[in-house]
Length: 514
Image (cartoon, rainbow, N blue to C red; front, side, top):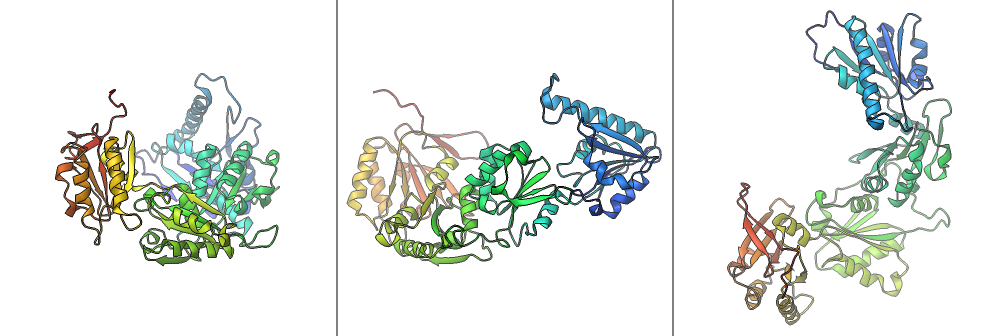
């Protein structure tokens, strides 16, 4: 219960109450809600132009003949309007007029209870009165049971457990936005269905959440209906219905194909980006949450939150093929497996290793998906400015899987073509001379003052992004956690007067004509 700051004229004005009535069943009204209605002089409620108010019907048995009733009738609901301000203009004008009607009662010293189904401050009509009146009059809000709580109770399915995230979405969001948010979250409730139902259903299907999704219509009210969302005819869906994707922990997806009874597994190769959760795409976040097994280099696995029921298979950084084979074996036994990779899994990372093993006869029937991630070059470039704004080449300096002669040949070719270079894996404890040799080679093609970005631990706690001249590149300042961006002949580095005391680096999109 929230109470606004008392006003100086409390003795002469009435008190405003926003009263939550719960999801529909009058027996789910709180004791406090009943008390407030009983003590009010004025009971106000919103309705469409047909005049029927769900809020009034819930509270009907508590209304007295001497109550002053204020029916706040919307001029429009979903239909079009010829109001000069459009739909929003018509509603704003209505809210102002409704607030003025209630203010007249409050100024006359009457207590006003604005009743609202569900909770007054959760997608409730009352909040529009609250914004216009609560700062002028003493106000109290009486919380109510939301339709979300009622829907979960009627389904008998927990909404969220442990560290799961519950996302509440209006069905009026664009389909792409709904899809991304459904893919990223653990559990979800989509409100405001009705005519939005076809969009919501497509978003559920595209995000992979349709098999889990449930439908609840008029929870706790007459005409209540619950079913699997996939079984609902869109022509039968009213506004007062919700879609529920319940807790994955409490309601784990079935491990077998419903049609055949056989276990159905898959491998999803997920890129976590260069650092922590801020760099994860919604699709990757959803895949990690849905997996039964996580396989990966221990450092990358540590970036993924621990979830009850998930099995984690960590290993050293140099056993890519073994990790891939483990993941495919698990999937072949019906497990949903996420192979965790840093950055983008298709760039010097685990996607290739998984696909190489998956091409072998024992694993060719195992479904494999690769989900993109933010790669280190893009992250470093964004921190520096836009050094990759024109053509560029991506080269790994590691000679563990290819000879140095191949690396040197590619460096020569890319440098001669005047490409910006993104250099991965520049150095490690066992590889200490490659950076110096690369600098020497590149100086054959580039001016000494060519900008070089040294980006270390981008997105992590030890992030450092510096710009030096190519001739001043110090190999001792480069390690395995560093990525190098070598500018082309056109790349600019400028110190801006924005207080950061750092260079901003960019490569123009327009290349000079020969």
